[in-house]
Length: 525
Ligand code: ADP
Image (cartoon, rainbow, N blue to C red; front, side):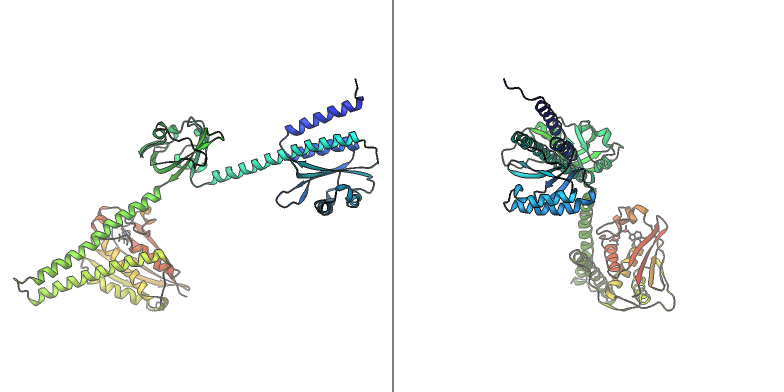
């Protein structure tokens, strides 16, 4: 029987130990350190070396681990390495590149005498390059070289695994960040519908904190107040999700309703459940994407209110016009001139109201499609205000109108028709929302760069909550008075759009019960 010499046995044991340590380690930096240390120890006892890894996307090599090399020398070493690698890819062998290798050794330390290039190759693909230098010329037997080769093969596997692990980790971090910062609520359920992941957006939506929610059954956290057409429980009882066939996209489940939050408030949400299968087709997780649908519902509600409001708005003048026209046309009656004139006046006024309404609607729908276009001319805001007040004065006997402008308000560049509509909308609101009457004051002032104008009434006022919404499209405050008064919720939306197209600003100051002041600030130039 052939006995291995003692040092061979020791070397083999050491090698096995190193390989075990290498393959158990998944941190790429640590694996590289181990490989480098072990190879230097095997070849040189003490010595110098580095490992460069290949970037498969660019085919470039970057030095990732060094042993006993001055870091100052790294940039030059990398450029020499690039030349070396270019030589290899042109079909030369490492041994043919003796000159390049020698140059590298010189750069690191002129005392270095012998070097060993070891390509790290995994399944035919280069993974990197390991270079070890020693400061003496020693004898290397074919056995030594064979052992080095198998060591390099093992090292390539360890490096490759650590690289894969690093990549998976990076992907996971990216996914974590994505879920963490998603504006939608996201949770992951296991097959028992226990929560295994719960993101911050969902914490905000449900008032649960993630630490408490983890491990809970989904039903403890997502408590449905109203739900249609059926929750996940019903869906699962009915056999959801169907086992997917090969190229099926997974069957998602959409549930919409109101959930009761931990603090007792309710929130309208839409949840989409997506099943996640293992490679052998078993359900492993369900991912739930939870969306707050409050604003969607509000938009829908506003649209509904708008449609019923607009039909009412259209019907009233049409009914009046038809009524008066019918009455005046009656053949069995003869009207005196004054009655005919009054009747025609109503018809004319109502026709004007219809035109106004249709113009507002057209302007709003046009504004949705494109930016407002202005025709700029010199505009005197005090004159526009005075004319608007004249128009309203004849319509209302309950209100007293008051104009408070300084003697020489500067002329601005503006769109006269647009600004006229602004005054009409604000004054019509001031009249509508002060049903008891009172003073309606229109005034203004100028500063160095701006002109400001206000319209003040002593009406019902607007609560702070509502003040945030009254400039929204179709928005009407839901109150007894708005239900009684005609309106479409477009007036302030258009007013704001016109002012903003002039680079101006509009805001409201108001207290419920004490009246409102709408303030507009327009730039002078
Ligand atoms: P509307 O056609 O309903 O009048 P607007 O866009 O002009 O639409 O106004 C939106 C809402 O703002 C109104 O429904 C009303 O509730 C409130 N609002 C507007 N102006 C006033 C005001 N001067 N005083 C009190 N509430 C007002």
